[in-house]
Amino acid sequence: QVQLVESGGGLVQPGGSLRLSCAASGSIFSINTMGWYRQAPGKQRELVATITSFGRTNYADSEKGRFTISRDNAKNTVYLQMNSLKPEDTAVYYCNLVVSSYAYWGQGTQVTVSS
Image (cartoon, rainbow, N blue to C red; front, side):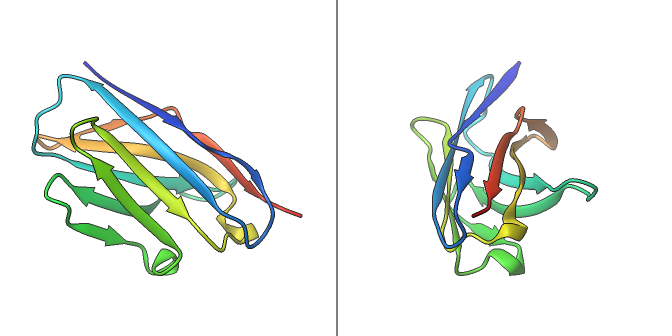
């Protein structure tokens, strides 16, 4: 069984920054992909960024240059540094782990960008 626990969400003003963390525990193979997705009210869940266990990253176009994904393989933890936040970044952010073609999800953490 795999568990993902997210932290770091909250309320931030436009232009501000937040850092999300997601710690994975359980039966995790060393080769996997971790990432972040988000879902705004009334919208479908969408990709934010992913990172493989080898460090290869992939970003949604709207986040390139503002968000940075990283990971600590020794801690099975993935991070999302979000800078220059905009109101349209408001959403529930979900951590995702893909291993052996199976996807696991965290419970989500709310990010609200508002003045």
